Amino acid sequence: MGKIISVFNQKGGVGKTTTAVNLAACLAVKQKRVLLVDMDPQGNATSGLGIDRSAIETSLYDILMNGSEDPAGTVYDTDLQTLDVLPSNADLAGAEVELVNMANREFFLKKALEPYKSSYDYIFIDCPPTLGLLSLNALAASDSVLIPIQCEYYALEGVNDLVRTINLVRSSMNKTLQIQGIVLAMYDGRTNLSIQVVEEVKRFFKDKVYTSIIPRNIRLAEAPSFGLPVVLYDPRSKGAEAYMELAEEFLETESEN
Image 1 (cartoon, helix red, strand yellow):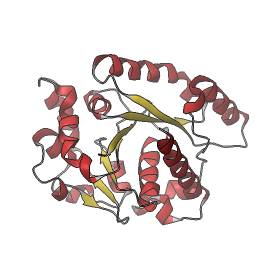
Image 2 (spheres, helix red, strand yellow):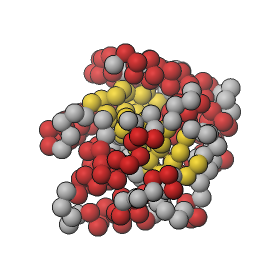
Image 3 (cartoon, helix red, strand yellow):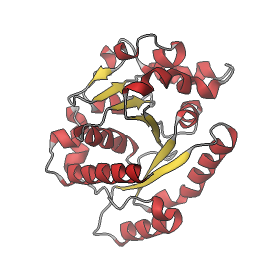
């Protein structure tokens, strides 16, 4: 049964979608069966894997609100054989409004993902950068949460809020939710600030912080505009190498648990 992992940080611009797309892709390169669920109405994970949002016939909105009798027919292929996507577009923004007045509104995604779990090793959910019903659905459905943190000062300010949110979800709707790990992203080793942020995050989260750190990298920034994960766009770039190292560390940690 596939492990469900939310990639979540309620602060925007921290490398969340970049991490969701590229870690999923690198695990697929390592022959893991991976499903990426695009829970963000902006659909950046969808377009970042080469899927035209305007041409989607069945989106995550349809699956979330109506379920699916044919899971295999609702996922979209990518350029990697073992990586599939449940795509989203602007329709998903409507789901947040529709869910407000529904019973058990935080558990729609958990129910919707049940038919998919047997087909994948890992299911990653790219969450929106807000703490609304879509993010709560993702956290309620997940076994664990992977947290990207940008190596800049303002990122530290949101850490306490982030932990408070996870504890709230754990106490009220998902008692088994664990922190999968902390990914330090957008690292610039030339600045003292980046180095200080790394030290502070490690002090706070201790052994939950991955040693693989994602640097600022032009190729990593360019890849989404070509609809490719960086491991396919430029496999020799520093960004691709960093995410491959992260994937290896991720799997090592999984094998230890």
